[in-house]
Length: 431
Image (cartoon, rainbow, N blue to C red; front, side, top):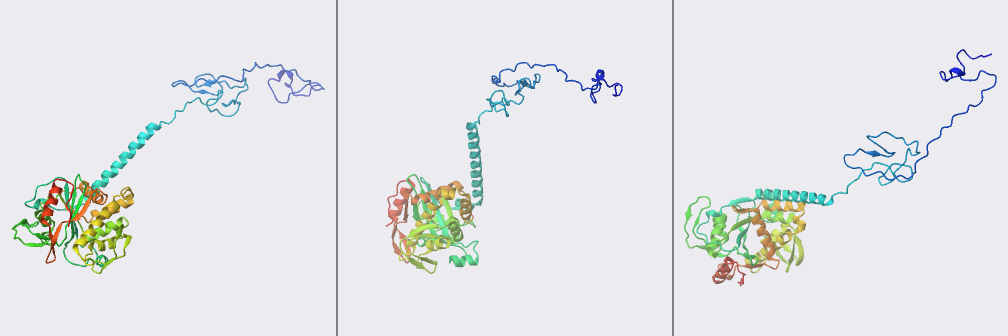
């Protein structure tokens, strides 16, 4: 008797897959399953897929592409075949049929170097141009050389009149006390030099402030009034005190016959700031000396002078027997050392040193209206060359003294001026 519910028999097994069994008392015997034979597998080692060309569809591991039919690889037993020849893992091009068949080109280093070099040149050029205009804007062009009358003709080379004044402009009471400058009103010239820059090397000539010179006729720098010459002889620094830079240039040109192309003046405060900005100036002082008026107190030997000490060094004259002549020698020595130690790669290529140094100097420099940053830099490097073996430094040739004033040797001065005007090598000596 069949106890299974109606409709549950072998005849309807295909319709209901749950609760299937035999209607007999003994279990149903095992059925014989039909044998399904797989086709033979292809060889394991297949040739590498062809290199993909531009515009062709991507080929993937397993032998299919974007446009073709999908082959799962179950029939071959290589469902997860890799590209490293071991049948496992992801593909890394160059294996047997694995991974993306993409070609990666090598970096174009030549192009990268060209772009990098061009970028560097643009940056350096931009910084240089910016620095030039920044420095140019800081120059105080306050001296009008067109007001100087009856000027001698220009010679070969360039002549700069470099003046160190005792101007205390911008200095506090504490600064004046520290630098031993006093508190005198107005300003006078403490040092005067002619720097000739030509093809035979630079020549630096000191003009003693006590030089006995004639004050010629001149046009007032402010009034424009013409003042006739009276044949009066006085100290050279009196010309500056009478009517400023324009009369000083007129007096130097009249007494030497040398045309002055540019005028540069720096005061006490600016001088000290430049020295401090570069970290001091190293000097070899041959003999110890002291001077209460300038604040000088130096031992013999090599030493680094700060701004305060440097100012005392170039101002001292009462500690020496020849007073003004000895001081001009020290001034030449110091300025040449200052230029030499400033125009170095460690200063020029270091913006943290270059800009403070330029700022300290440019803030206090007074120049003529035609002076450019280029001309100023030419002057600076010529000063450096004075001690580089190509230049010469000297005092104006001296013949003696009269009432404390220094008398020039007129014959030697004439010969010196001729050599400078013709841009010849200077052979004239100061004594």
